[in-house]
Length: 167
Image (cartoon, rainbow, N blue to C red; front, side, top):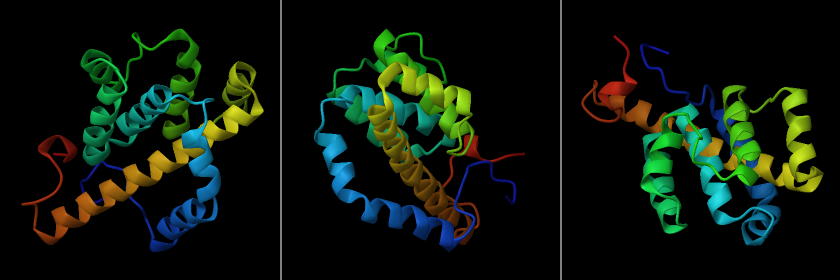
């Protein structure tokens, strides 16, 4: 990707598909965020896990603040953003590990890993988790695409941090 490592949208069509998913399923998405099946802290841990894979600086900043507001310690947040989950509550660990795997597999997790998620939380909650992960992936990739565009139109003066550049 022209010397840049971050995941971005490769086409407008891909972005429109993700946006269409959100618009089409917005009632279900709202219900998930009002539901007790996925606590706000659990959702934030999963979102941070996906964000660390996709390396979106905007989402990392936003979800760090949201996680702090949900009572997650700064140390745990930093640990998640570094790809480790040693401080994650045991009842949420399967979901957070799944979130990381889901992101690494570009939203197409291994059937065995998906089966373990269903065994841990049930089919309905597993489906809700997939929706949460698709939402954060959309935010991550959108943020990275904007960052990449800013970087390119400014000839490297704006956008991506030094750590996000290769070479």
